[in-house]
Picture 1 (spheres, protein in one colour):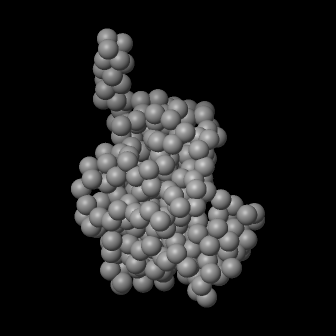
Picture 2 (cartoon, rainbow, N blue to C red):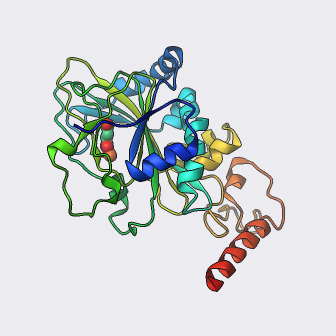
Length: 299
Ligand SMILES: O=C(O)CCC(=O)C(=O)O
Ligand SMILES: [Fe+2]
């Protein structure tokens, strides 16, 4: 059975990106202290307890999935903003975008009796239209319980990012993201993986926090899961990660739907959170993009 590579909590972003390119996944060991994991547990527990099982075999009839974790849990905001993960996103995702964004926040509780999930690539969320040369996504699952092969540790097929679409994994090619509570599975949008079967007596809980290229649609609609009334209380970098920032020169502006003459036209999303937008706010980004277009044309 293949095993996953492990790296320390503060691993260099280039190391993480290289393993994501080659293997598609790795485990960062013991990133959270037990007290930090307890805090996450405490904050999400009421929501997780109240969540019904999934609606089909993919979401899992013995699995609960609980979202809106930025709005609901300050401790989960710290996971979203974890410096090791954001540094890895800077290297891994900025190869194909000006800005990456939060894609999904979801506590996944695999309960006893849940069978294996079907193997898949998360990039199929975009329907298979993205060219294979573009890696759209960096994913994390933060272990809130120990992850073991017996209790449903994520199944992962190391090396599968480069496989052709039609290749299916043989059982001996599937490994398990076994890790201790507080560790993090990091995996790409292109690696073949799935939730595991839970043959134990206890729950397996992981916090799935994922990031994607800023020009793609987010899996969890962050503007609805964390609307401006809540987003305006967050730190600016987290607001931007949710999508309350321009994704590129022409991505994401809006016109506040106010009576005629009472609001500006075409302002960045931060305006909805109370920020003052300076005049000529697009100039810097326009210069960057014009330069890039020139460089492409002359290449
Ligand atoms: O819970 C897990 O271990 C993985 C779940 C998964 O891959 C998914 O739902 O897309
Ligand atoms: Fe998945």
